[in-house]
Image (cartoon, rainbow, N blue to C red):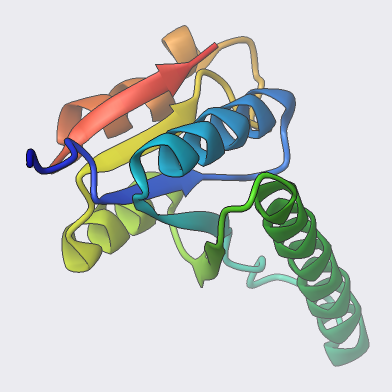
Length: 144
């Protein structure tokens, strides 16, 4: 019996159209291979210049609600296809956080969307995608 090529899959998920396509592909791969599936969503650090404590708390509350909804929807998408999805939300710089999480988790495959929410026209083929592809410690599947 041969070992499946991917035992642990990580998908970067920010709720964008391309990330949703990447999540669907990752779910299908996990279902077909029996791989363990994880998603990571990266929340950028809150601005240091928020005027009041109240404003800071409001921004933090809205951000927490957004990521709770995002991970709930992702788990539901996987569950519909019979796949268990382990969701993770981490704060930090997008590329650094995903690469570090990928290294620490021992993932065999990183699945990413071609372009996420940062759409300032294409930051050169989605420089986040390009940088992740170059720095990842494992194979990378870029989904368009």
